[in-house]
Each structure stands twice: as C-alpha cells, then as structure tokens.
Length: 141
Image (tube, rainbow, N blue to C red):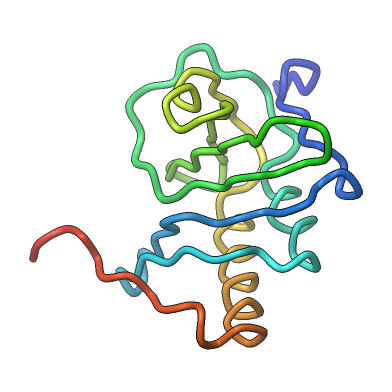
C-alpha cells in the first residue's frame, strides 16, 4: 500500500528554472549521457517519479543516473535514480550529491522514467546537437 503523504513533493513546474539529467545510463546501448532536459519534458520525467512514499528499508541499489533540479527561491535538489526490478521506481534526494543518499523514496514507474528520459534526450539533441555527445561507458570490458 503506497503512502503518498510520506512521499517526496517536487516543486511545481512553474517554480522550476532548470532540470538537468546527469550521467544517465542507457542499458540497451551502454551509453552514458548528460543533458539539460527540455522544458516540454519536465512533466513526463518528474511525473514518472510520482506518486512516491518514503522508503525506510532501502537496500544497496544500482544507480543509473541523477537529476539536478533548480527551482525559484530554493536550493538545488539532486535526485539519484536507481534501477529496480519490475516497474517500481526508487530514488533519493538531497541538496548535494552526498546528502542525496540519505532520503529514499519508492514509487512512480521506472519504465516510464527511462522512456521519458530517452524522449527528453532525443529532443535535447535535436534542439542542441553540438552540445550533446554520449560519454563513453566508464566500466572496462
């Protein structure tokens, strides 16, 4: 049973100034990319993380990327994204990279999130093709 009253409340879309996707891993291709999420995709990306509930029993999970969210009159928020079995999403939040590993939330839909990020990346490349090069996979073969 989901308890959304304990979930993470993202800023409203009108309060968001910038949303960045950082080191997002595409497991189908092995490519890792970082890009600014176009405004037209903010709702799809953040909506795939909601509703959520606080997860007090989080275990070691595989990170597949981060989001950095800048909002009006608020400190930046780092959202660490985790790969989970099935469609259930898992993420953690904090005001910097280190504190983002302390506040865990479960919810949303991980498949929808991956699809929303792929669409956002494609749109970002279309809008700014010269600024978006996939990064090499840092793990050796």
